[in-house]
Amino acid sequence: MKLTMEKPVYGGDCLARSVGDTAKTGKAIFAPLTLPGETVTAHITEEKRSFAKAEVDEILTASPHRVAPACPHFAACGGCHYQHADYAAQLAFKEQIFRETLRRSAVAVPAEIRVLSGNPWAYRNRIRLAFTESGELGYRGRRSHALVPIRECPIAAPILIQAARQVAAFLAGISIPAPVSELELFTNRDETQVLLTLFIEKMPAAATDAWLAALSDALPSQIAGIRLQLADGSLDPKTLDAIGESSMTYTAAGFPYRVDHGAFFQVNRWLIDEFVSLITDHPSGGVAWDLFAGVGLFARQLAGNFAQVLAVESAPASFSALRHNLSGTTGRAVGSTALDFLRHNREQREPRPDLIILDPPRAGLGEETTSLLNAIHVAQMIYVSCDPATLARDLRTLTQERYKIESITLVDMFPQTFHLETVVHLIHS
Image 1 (cartoon, rainbow, N blue to C red):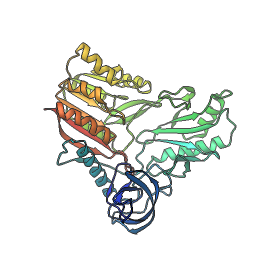
Image 2: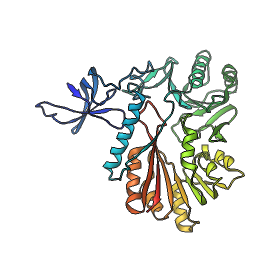
Image 3: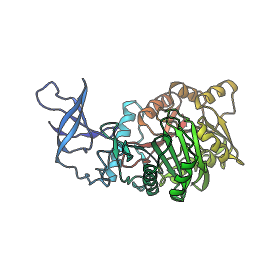
Image 4: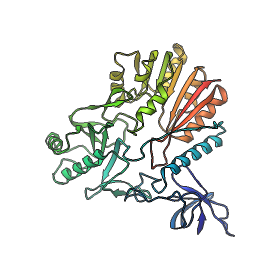
């Protein structure tokens, strides 16, 4: 069928409407790798009662924002969604999608949404790759979960792909106790240190020390530590063996953070400094709470402006580094989920904070957490979100009862993809 693409939607597709005198008239059709205003021919790949999905056969009329993708694996690989659009258009899509998401949830949208962006290439400081049956490195495909072998990844820091290929070459030449199914690499901003994690599907049949030592010798000097983990799908997978350092130093916003194997850290190495400054430069006062604190990216900076900072984190991979990064400051690490911490505060009535920072995972805060936050009457909250739908849901609750939005900044942490990060400043109304 012939389609005219109307607008971008969250997830990387564009929306069109079917036309003609069939039962499909007016049905929403979502097609990837298209841009608003383009005319295309496409075929339906999946059909539901209220919408359909399509794949494009031919671009009849191209958008002026269409560009040649920088990566030869684009469209087959599922990692990127917007490499066919110029970067200015990508930012415009994200702002449009974000505004529409808030409006649908009846959240008042400020007239101005600021945008923080940087170099859209080589920004990722962390990647995770899987091995095909033949030992090639690959990402999951766009159309399925099948692996797409890759030779390069222009959105990743160069050292990561270089090291991954060397790992693959080494493993292809030796017999190991159990097959490695995936690997994860994490580097600091200047690519001087790299942490490598190897994942295996089952317990090794023999000792792994010897081949881990041989692997370490075969890799670049930037590899600071290697860890072997059991890929059992848990949030805290079992470590089977390790060699080298268990953490590395990541300097951000003027402070050298300790970041351990497996700990969460912001992924865009070009934007971290400005991102931290956006959140921590101006607030000051007596007490600040940093919920979902990770390794203390925000809490460590806040400790210079507040008499007391409580940094709440439940993930074992992050908590030890959090305590280290707050040592000698006004900050204190609290090992708890954010929800349990807020429940405890409701009972014990800790001193009311002047500022609360929220940086939850994609699932957002949820009903009970937002209810507890509404009951605190804090003067200022800063909500950092990586999912516009859950953010809109939470903002609706927070702004209907207690707070109002002072400003929103769209931070493009994930160029070339549909993912977007936002920072919302809320004040007590």
